Amino acid sequence: MKVLLHICCAPCAVMCVKSLRDVGFEVTGLWFNPSIHPFGEWKKRRQAVDELSASIDFAVIYNDYFNLEENLARLLAGSAEGDRCRACYSERLLNAAQTAKRKGFDAFCTSLLYSKYQNHSAIEQVGREAAELAGVEFLYRDFRPLWGRGITASKRMGLYRQRWCGCIFSEFEAEKEREARRTNSSE
Image (cartoon, rainbow, N blue to C red; front, top):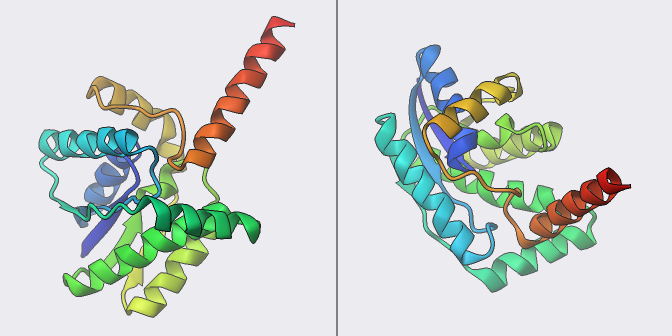
């Protein structure tokens, strides 16, 4: 089966690619992440996907669309509705589903399913909705049990490892959490 794997970042994709290949899937990556901010961070993560692609002989389709104003408006609207992350998932997974259908893949999946920090039920629901709209299968896999091995592998490969999910809001939230941990540990 030919599977298009949406890649949120190289470290999250490492074990997803291995796991899918191990069960016989022919895997191609898709880089489409207009929610990653700032643009310098987006470039670092895209470069890490290039490095992963070269190191494990993994083909990647690049959709380098990046429109800051449009993306911020979508994320702000999602925040107003109480679910900014779902708005981000929807944009990326609909693009993955449409790309999979257009390019003749049997199914699509996403490395977002690797992260223990993501909302898996929302990703699964959004993936299935995108699949229905595009007319292609969404391949749900829970990659979270591979978390530790993926961290080890991505560090061994020297891949850039970010400190937040992607958008400017998640960067702010991650920094607040790190600051709270520092404050609590010094008390």
